[in-house]
Picture (cartoon, one colour):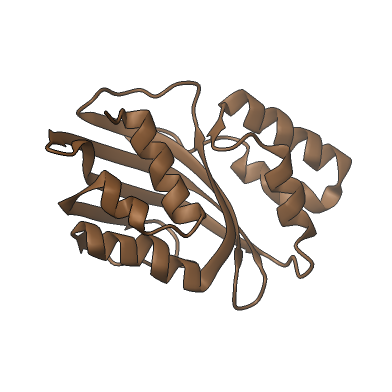
Length: 188
C-alpha cells in the first residue's frame, strides 16, 4: 500500500524523469491540480482536471520546455497524515530547453489523498510558485554544481542553507542563491 511519502516520491519520478505513467498510477482518475503563481517567468493553467490531463501538464508539456530537472522537498520531515499535507516547501533546479538557461524556483505543495481500490492515491494537489528565476548557464556548469551539491529529493532546510552559503562564498557567481537559501514560508 502506498504511503504519502511513496506518492510524493512517485510524483517527482514522474515529473523529473519524464515518466507520465506514474501520474496515472498514483493519482485518482478525477484528481484536481490547481496553481497559484507569484511570478510572470513561468505559467501553467489555473486548474487541471483528471489524471490524464495532469500527466500531460506536469510531465509531457513540462518536458517540452524544461529538462535536467530536480525538484527537492525542503523539510526535515513530512508534516501531514494519510489524508493531507497542507504545506510542503520545494526547490527546483532545471534547464530551459529553448535557451539552456538555468531555472531556479521555490514554492510549496498542498496534497490531498484518498483510499480506494488501488490503495492511497493523490486526489488533489496545489502548486504554489513563489519564485522562478532565470540565469544564463550555456554550458550547464552551474546546473551541475547545484544539483550535485544537494541531496535528492529530501532536502533538510539546514542543508539547503549551509550548501548555498558555502557555494556563494566559494564563487561570487552564485550570489543569486541568496534568495533561495530559505524555503518559502508557510502562508498565514
